[in-house]
Image (tube, rainbow, N blue to C red; front, side, top):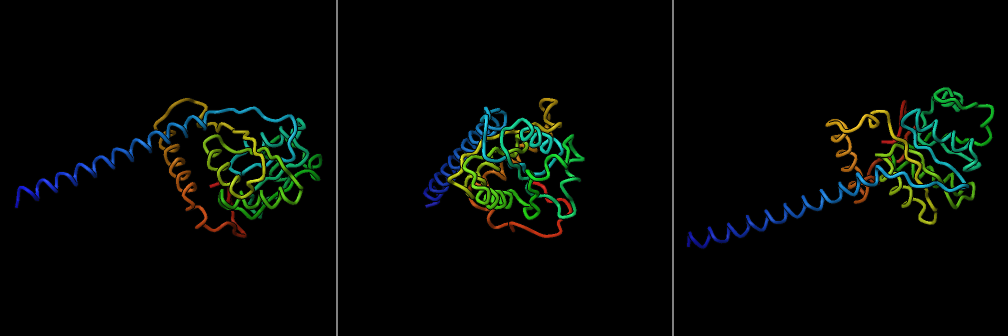
Amino acid sequence: MTARRHTVFGRVVRALARLVLAALCLWAGGFAWFLYQVHQEPPLPLQADGIVVLTGGADRLEAGFQLLERGHAPRLLISGVSRAASLADLTRLSSANPALWAFRVTVGHEAVTTHGNAAEAAEWGNMIGAKTLIVVTANYHMPRALLELKRAMPQMTLYAAPVVPPAFREGFSLNGMAFLTWEYTKYLGAMLGFSRLVRVSAYGALAPGAV
């Protein structure tokens, strides 16, 4: 009887080990795909209906204003901005002229998460009658941003304009890899729908950003 129990126990352990190994292989394969997506620089359309910048750094704002200046789209939304910040405050973080873009730039103050960014962008896109949008955010954030945006507006054609943050321009680092691992974990959570459990907007936030 004891030998039989050991046999059953051994089979259970081996089955669990196979499941864990399979899960690790799936996770590693997904992470490799995620890293590949992060380092892509897809071509941009000559003309889109709008540009959406997800806040989180001056480099994103600079990239968004440059796309607007080059004529890639006639309108721009900056999503997830603190209610204490104005367009003038944002342009001071870049070389943009607030007077020049005042009637072409919309500052969104409601989103505090990527899920919230998507809701804010969808409302704005519908308001301007957009069918194509250029999305500007950090390269590591782009896969999750596109996932949430596509869910919020499945009829919209989205083009990625990833920005490489300064910390990722210096090559490989353990801190950078740890950060990407955490971002991949958040991407998986968003893919499973966990991001919908987080509040979409908040008023009076000091520095919402794209989290």
